[in-house]
Amino acid sequence: MPVPSTIITLPLSVPISTGQEAIWQIIRDLDKRGPWAVADIDSSTVKSVITTISEYVARLERGGFIEVVGTKPVPGRTLMKANLYRVKVKTSEAPRVRRDGTPAPPSAQQQMWRAMRSLQQFTYRDLARIATTDDLKIGEVTAKTYVQRLSDAGYLQLLQPAKNSGGLAIYRLNRKMNSGPLAPQILRTHFVFDPNRKVVVGDPSLADNAEAV
Image (cartoon, rainbow, N blue to C red):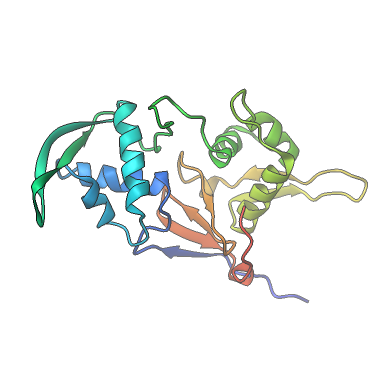
């Protein structure tokens, strides 16, 4: 008889992602202490690509989420100055903006997480249908993969297993794992990063699989 695997929760000492969500959380932390520059974000994360950070900051400025409040000298470059910014629109969820500053649709995972938090129960097919919007179509394969990963990490409770006759598994969100508005992110190791609690959650027996959503 197989031994049940154990769900573990690991706190993070460094940012797990260099995407917009991670950059925005660093910006929010920096802004609590006063004006900040792009270089301050870069020094706060170990995996950042400076061009990615600069591009996202430019989008945020064009979208009105941040504003320039001054400048400061660039170390080692006498004639150069870096912009200092402050956050204008305070939001826990990272703004998704296009290059011209106009709003971009939420990610597929964010849409599905919102749907999960509002539904009493669901199948992956329900999730794909309900989370789809005019701006973003979510495929059933994407929804099925996300549901399976969150289920493996303990975020979902299985109410009814799938049936050989074609009936789909029915799930609901585990109330104890309803950690906040930000969607848990799937990592390549099958672990899940919870940006609300800033921890990695998952089943160590699955951690050697390199597949990603």
